[in-house]
Image 1 (cartoon, rainbow, N blue to C red):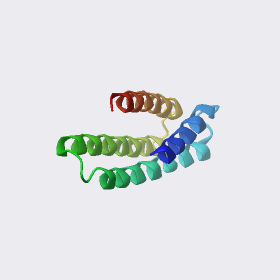
Image 2: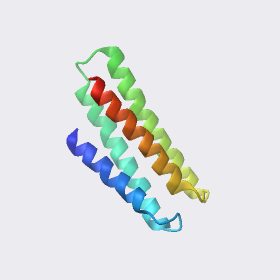
Image 3: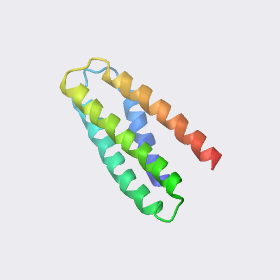
Image 4: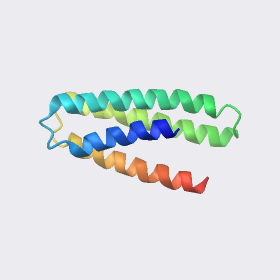
Length: 107
């Protein structure tokens, strides 16, 4: 999972470095990378959680699906020309990162 966290942080930094939403090609690339990250992470979690408690497994998979659903919503917002999309993505990733860190500390 450390490799996955590095991928997440790389994407997070790229979103943070966007000057404004006018950098459409960069923003679309970030959304595509987030989708790839989410797809991979969901498949990895499914494998890693095979022997875990059913409740824990379902909670983790639900969270991963929720992440993927939000990324798909960002794709739609991009297609509709949302002018605040980079800020919205960054806000979402910050919340996700904090939640992920808190969950990691609980375990």
